[in-house]
Image 1 (spheres, rainbow, N blue to C red):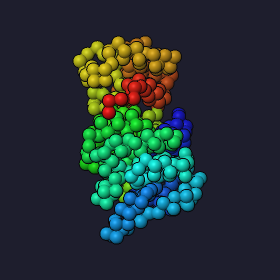
Image 2: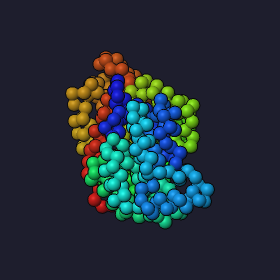
Image 3: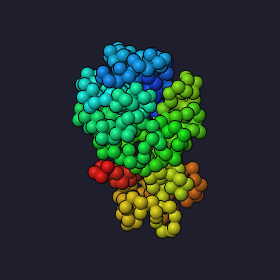
Image 4: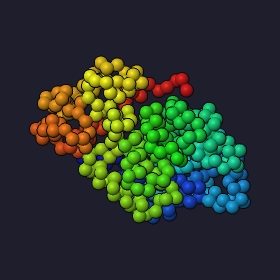
Length: 371
């Protein structure tokens, strides 16, 4: 199996489980994280207000009874020191109105943490301070912040809210600006929105909102999410349930967030499971939508599996496991070949994951310039 890479790495560190603590202003602090550290792989603490405008907005909200906004920028260093050795990848959720404010934070706290731009807060004082949801309606300002952080060489996440603007276009814009992670509060849009975003950009995707059961978590993973996050529902029992379930899934299946097959609503990663383009099926329209010819698709998959165990399979439908379906789909020819190679199903799926990674790299090789 993949060992430390069974899931993924963020900010140069292996993520022990793809379950994330999302920030809750003034609530997600080091003590909160440490209580849950056994069952999360990533945690965003904060949010923290960086500049005079956002700090004044926080004061207004506290005065109005929203005491969770009573965070202090001065506390960050202490919080980070408490989290050393926790084996949790840490991010800072930050509210700010200018690129300079974010750059100052990056220079102060260094590259050991992820910098998450809060484009999510919808409280009016924060919007008036030109942060939070303001940045979704003013994407030039958002992209200026992303570019400034990217230039500092740090890992950049953007926390956003689905359904406010065109999420696909937003994904392309933040990708082009240099973001690494898109952390999406899905609101009521569900996993179909994650699939749309997954098909629009190659960023690491964190799906958030009401993910409190294995079924909901797997819906997100099978439609394009790399991680799932919890906020107010992040009780220790819930986190433990999700963590144990996804660890067992990863061990058994070999690919913890494998997509549904394309013909069953899968995202672009599911091209790894598609056969040759010889019949009328969703593969043909998908290739047209991404501007890939049938011949290019054939050459791409054949090239990516060259010298790999899944290049074998003379008794399969198309002469290679490269064209075979997901391990959960019954197929006697695939299974006979896997036994003959021999190749366990979980290793087969791990190799299919590698193939999917190569396909996605090809699809998203060119950073957009038209957004």
